[in-house]
Image 1 (spheres, rainbow, N blue to C red):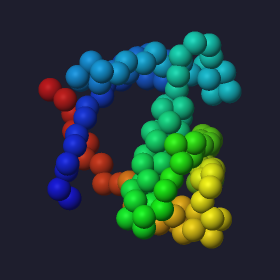
Image 2: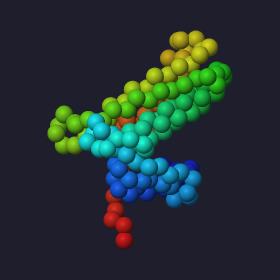
Image 3: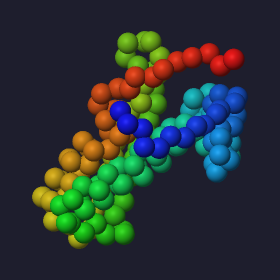
Length: 141
């Protein structure tokens, strides 16, 4: 794959800690939800960050495929990602459950369905969800 953009983020403290990007443009306080045994309260969690990223990326993919087809996508269009976490059925850890709700006001429903289906092919988050991802692991010096 020809990488066009790359970023780097570091987390400290795990689910209750901090995360920040190397360029300093983004920093977040992480708090484990009460439902997962944490303190809850002010802060965000990885599932919220994933939901935000997936929703934004999928909407970008929708706009991309709509542009290719010369279909106008309203500025009021939205993608809402619902992300859940729970124990996997195989007992080996945790998994994610994801649902995307897409609103394309003013677009014919049949055309909207085609755009959503094509965006699901184009979106890298969707590709990850369908096909997995090869992750290179290393120990930092």
